[in-house]
Length: 421
Length: 106
Image (cartoon, rainbow over all chains, first blue to last red; front, side, top):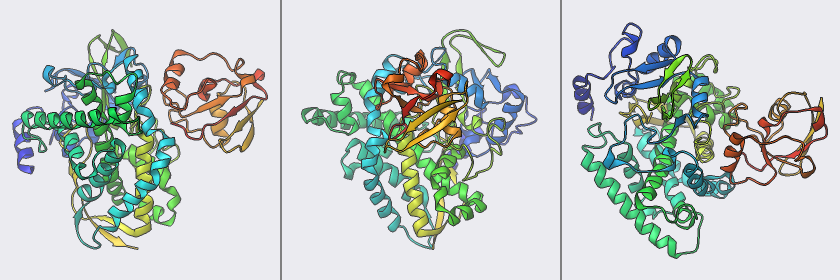
């Protein structure tokens, strides 16, 4: 895989890898290319833009011209003004290809967004989660109890992916034996062809079609049964969703798979990375496990598993003195807002007892705010409670490998060793 | 000052003296009332300061704007007397106000 990436870096004139963020012409800074994200070189670029040009226009890039919104307060303004900053046609930085458009409510405006979201939301509401807590804990314990001690293994594959996959299967009431398909489809849905995960667009298409076929079978089965509390049943029986065309159903299913998969997976890994980079915080946690709920929010801020969300201006408008034209792409870099010293003190530090840790941007704000936020927090909380009950240290023993994406901010591999209490 | 009573889901009551002009959410948070998260800090954009206003006070807490309506309409726990406490301003008229906090903020 590293060969593919090295080749990509050499070939792409758009990659920022190896460039000096402080001396290069500021107008040439382009955050959209995955190179600096995978190489973990993005932070100084974000810092310079926040300081010198917090609403930055990138005229030329592989994905066309776009605005970057870098500061916490400006991101808040864009996120909470959905009538000017639309989520249609897409929330990704790449304009959707005609043949590859899957409609889902994350990329819809009101009123359709509200109607469809209302159907899916109850399944991840806290009252429903309360019933799931015991099952989640049991599954977490089983995963942790089967890990080797004092022996190197990959935390991503054996813990992060395993746990989030099991959770998704639970939420969809998906056949447990086939649960790895969910992860595979999620990876394919967000993969960049040639970026390591997917070899080609055709491979992605094949996976997406398989996903549609599988979920169509599930839909047809559930619709004949009494309404249940899993997501497929809710969509199949919900008034606003039961007539939805197949591509819209698939779009929403993929949204829920990706939303519940990559994000939590990478926060689970990010927590281990953070505690190893800040060993005094690990010490603090060992001394008092009651920091866990607050630490969970801090992990989600520090990691920011989705680096950005994109909006499109519906009319001419102004942001921090910059003139944004109707139709312009506007990218809210949550990952930058979460490191904005003007709003968050010592923002680059990971502080498990940080006051107001919940006030991070990782879930977004406004009507599109992450629907699964409470589920994510619960999974992370239970995981860390059980990890701390078992292991003195989850030690990172090799360099983390990162996802080739400017959107999914995460890890493909993290070698660790467990040390018992 | 106006006296406000917050009743938790389990029935525990908390009375606080709230500063006039502040929001009901701030009055709760600054007095350590459990059950109000207020993740967005009062921008009407997260719906985690949800409260239920006792019926006799519903007419006095002011009208809801479209943004609050939009945020609340997405909440599965929404009831007829639901409000976001960051959008209610504490006035002398609200002295004695009683609100309940939901079991979960979402």
